[in-house]
Image (tube, rainbow, N blue to C red; front, side):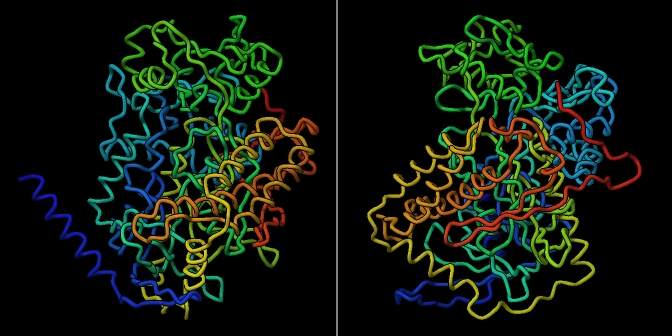
Length: 629
C-alpha cells in the first residue's frame, strides 16, 4: 500500500512539473539533417546539480514560493556530497571555548592568504547558525553525553588565532556526515516542492547577446530528447573535476561540467591551478580515508616506524593542513622511507585506538579499510598515499553567489542571471588550499547565499522574463550531433586514459616548469585528437558512451586550464608547490588567476585582485605572514 501511494504521489508530482513548466514541443534539424525533439520549460530559477549546494539552493528558492527546477545528471542521493566523511566546521564551542573569528583566521591561513576575506568572514560567521539549521532539519549529528553536537579535531584548526592549541570545531555524524547531509537536504527539497529533472545532462548555458544567462539546454538520458530550460536565474552547483587525474577520491561523475559550460561561453574560471591532494587515500584504489581518522588520534608512520609529521609540523603534527601533510608523505617516499615492496606509500595507524571508538566514530573507515585494503583496523595500519581530492578553483563568484566577469575596470562585475556554489565555484573561501571540513560548510553556506540572492532579486524585479533568443541552444545540439555521429579512430576510453596519466605525472604534488610545459603541450594535442573521437553507440536512449564522451570534453577543458594556470604561476603557494620557485611571492603573485578558454585549446590568462578586506567591522583583515604549523 505504501509503495502504491508513493508511486501515485510521484505521478502527480511529474504531472505538476510538466503542467507548470511545459511550454511547447518542437523538432529541430541540425546540419546533418537529423531531427531532435526539443521540449521547452519555463521556471523562475533553475539549479544545475543536486549535491549539497544545489539542493540547499533549490530548497531555499522553492520555500519562498518560486517555481524552481533542479536539473541533475544523477539521482540526487548519488551526488558526490555523499562521499564526504569528516564533518562540517562551526565555532559552536561544544568541546571548549571557540570563536568564529578564530575559525576565520585558520581559513585565511589555510588559504595561504589567497582567499577573499569578505567571503571567508561571511562563511565562518554564518557557520554556527547553519549547523543549527541542519540539525533542526533532521541531520543526525553524533552527540556528546550532554546531548550537544559532537565536535572532533581536524587539520589546520586552532584556538586564539593560532596561539591556543588544537581546536575541536568539526561537527560530525560519525564518519558519514556528507551522506547524512545529502539525504536530509533531499528530503527537505522534495517537501519544499522543487521540480526534479533527474538524469538530465546539461549541454550548455543559454546566453543572450547582452551577456545575460537565460537558462540551460539539457539532454534527457532516458529518451534522448532535448530540453530547454528558460529561467530568470540559473544556479550552477555541478561539483569538481577530480576525474581529470588518474588517482582521485572523486566519483565517476565528477567531470567539471559547470566550469566547462562557463568556459565555453568565453567567461573566466579562477585559480584552477590549485588542486588539493588528500594525504590519505587508500593505496591503489584511492578511496578516501577521512582526516577525522587522524582527528580521533590516528597518526602516520614511515618504514622506520617513525611518526614523521613531527619533523614537518612540530606543533600540529598529523593535523597540519592537507597540502603540508601531502608534501611530507611525498618527500618521505622520495627519500626512500616509504613502505611496501615498491616503497611508494606510508601507513596510517589506528589500531592503538579503543575498539569502541572505532565502532562509534569511524565505522565507515573500518569497513572501507577492510573492503579496499584488506586490513583489520583493530590490528593493522592502512596503506595510504596522497590522491587528488578537491579543486579550490572554479567559477569566480562574490559572497552572494553571483558569477563574476571582470570588465570595464570592474573586477567584481557580475554576469546577470548566473550564480554558482559548491566545488564548481570559487568564492574564494579556500584560496590556495582548503581546510578539511570547510567543504561541507562551503556548499550549504553558499547554496543558501545563492537562494537568498535569487529571492531578493525576484521579489524586487518580479518573475516575468522575455522569450529565449532565436535559435537558442541550436549550436549545442549541433555539437552533440557531431560528437555522436563522428567516425574518427579515437575511442573515448583511450583519450581519457592519456589525459589522466598526463595530469597525474605533469601536474602532481610537486611541479616544475619543464614538466608543466610538456604536459600543457600534450594536453593541447589531446584537445585536437578529440575531433577524431569515436562514439561507437549511435543510439539516443541511455547512451552511456555519449555521456562519457561529453564528460571527457568537459574534463579536457578543465585539465587544459589547470595545467596552463599552474605553468604561469611562478611561486609556491598552498597546494601549488613549484620545485623551481619554492617560496611564496606576495609581491608578484598575491592575485587570482583568471583563465579564458579558446576553442583551439589555447588558454588566455589575466588576473583579479584578492579581497583582503572584511565584510564588516566586527573583525579586522588578517595580514599575510609565514604559514607554519
